[in-house]
Structures are given as structure tokens and as C-alpha cells.
Image (tube, rainbow over all chains, first blue to last red; front, side):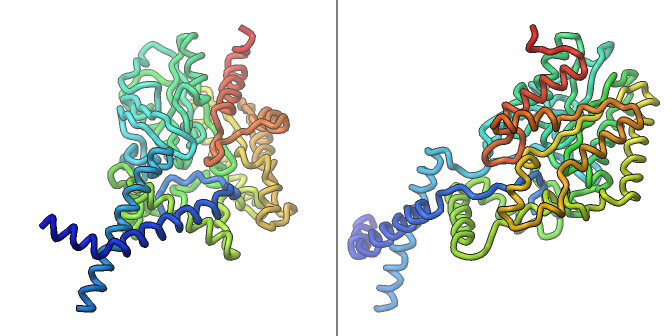
Length: 49
Length: 367
């Protein structure tokens, strides 16, 4: 079973690492492009609408 | 075979994403950007609305910081859980909304906590009946229910706090919905609450969800003409077209206050009103400019004038916080939390000391 998983991972490692890299590139781009503060409008509502 | 290969690659991509989410979740939590954990679990149903649960201990992690909420055996916010001995003791009661409840800080740092600390040196007990988002009707109901219990003792003074958002809604039974549902101590509009409840659970337990939601909103704001919808009650409150500018509504409001004073008189209670402007009212013109509205259509002094006129007519004590806070604002002091519109710790201290001065005619800083 473990050998099969290792074999499967080995066969798909390119996809795995590519997705991994794309995910973090997306997260860092999101963080960089949207990090400034925006206008805050008062919120006093407690009920979850 | 080709389908199997595609499925295999797809599975690998899904595993990679799940692995990344796990790392992101862990990382966000470590840098203090974990999931929201606002006021969940502190409420219980009360008539057709809600109130605070009795004897709760709750650590809140919110945009304004981490703080603790305790309620006493009456179900009012306090320094610690447990019973309060009121027999043969004078006591004062505070009524109001979240700004009086003390959102964003420990009780001893709230202005009611500061007042309570000072009052206790004079042998006076203080009860904070304020509940976030609770309209006046329920606040007065809470007070009446409390007094109508088998007590043979009544508060000496009731300090009723008004702000620019709860004056225009003085006769409302609710904010937006006609029916509030309390599920596991959280508050929901009973129409379609299940979907909101699921979303709420994500907000409570997943930092990744909160992170991606925030980024999506900011990106949308940046790339399109979309703007976070201004909190309409905030703008409407100061609008000259607000119903509080109609003489009929003013009459109703004044008669509401008069009934409250009559009720207090029946039990020998002294009513004191506090006018608390919203922290953002001092930069209201800036906000209007930002959202492209004409300042001519708004008046941020209206409720202060309304309360002053009424209290002068009725000879009721009014503690007006606007001149005091305006002074601090003009000195460049920050009156609110960065990510929460409620008064910050500094402002609560200023307010607490001022109310002590107005009620006890003592300046605690003179000691």
C-alpha cells in the first residue's frame, strides 16, 4: 500500500509541486496587491445577516 | 487510461491544495490572523430578541484585540462571574448598546468599569445592563424585568446612554429583521439562517477562509468600481431627511423619554442621560468626500442639540460627551480602534473619568 502511494506520488510529483508553487504565488500576489488599508465604515450590527 | 491519468493528476493537485491550505491555516494562526471569533456563544433568547447569558466566561479574539467577557448571575457584563450583593447597598445602572457594553476591551478598561471601580470606593455597586445591538425597548424591558423581580430595592440612578445610531431607532424592536434566531449563542436573521450559519462557522474556524474572503473583497474593490457598501444606518442617521427631523417623530421620542422618566420617578430612581457621539462623526465630512456625497444633506450636531433641548426643558441631567471628545479629536487623538468603530481604551478612560466627574463632582485625577 505504502509502496503504491509512493509510486503514485512519484508519478504525479510534477503536478503536485506545480500546484503547490502556483498556490503560494497566488497567495503572495494577493497579499502584495491588497495589503493597503481601506476606508473603514462603522459597524455596530451584531446579528449575522 | 487517459482518463485515469487525468484523474490521478487531478487528485495530486487537490492533495497539493489541501496541503497548502493546512500550511496557510497554521501560518495565519501563528501571525495572529486566525479565524474570526467575535461574540459567538454569549447570547440567549429573550422574549422575541436576545440578551447575555448568565455567568459566562468568554475570551474574544476580534479585530480590536483579545479580551475577556464575564457576566454576573444577573446576566450583565461584569469584572467576574458570580453573584452581586445589592441588598442595603446603593447601586447605579448603565443602559445602552455596544459602546456601553465595552466592545473590544476587558471590563476594567471600559468606561463603565472605570466608573464602577470608583463608585465601589464610595460603597456604590454598578450594574452594566448594556447589550451590543440591543434597541432601547429591550434595554428598558431588561431594567423593568430586573426591578419587577421580588426585589425590595431599586437603583438609585439609571444612566441611560444614547448614541447617533440608537436615537433614530428608539422605537424599533429590531435592527433590520423582524425575527431574530439565537443558535448556539449566535444571532441570526431567522429567514435563511442556515446558509449564514454555515458561512459563520467557516468564519469562526478557518483563517484561510477569512484571508481569502478579505483578499477577494479588496481585489474586487481595486479592480472594479465596487466599493464596500457604506453602512447605510450610519449615513442615514445624520441625513437631514432622517425621520428624526420630523416633528411627529421628535414628539414620539420625547414622549418615550418622558415615560421612562415617569417610570423612574415611580421607584424613586434618578435618570441621567449621556449623549455619546460616534467616533466617526468627527471625521464625517472626510467619509462623505470619500464616497462622493454632499455634506449639505447631513448634520452631525442634530442629536446633541435634540438631547440638550429636551433635557433643558425637562430639567434632567445630560452628560454631553461631544465637546469633550471633540477636544481630544482635535488634539489628534485616535478615538476608535483601527478595525472597529467602537471607542478605544484611551477614549473609554476619558469618558469614564468625565462621567465620574459629572456624577460625583470629583476629578479622580486631582487625587
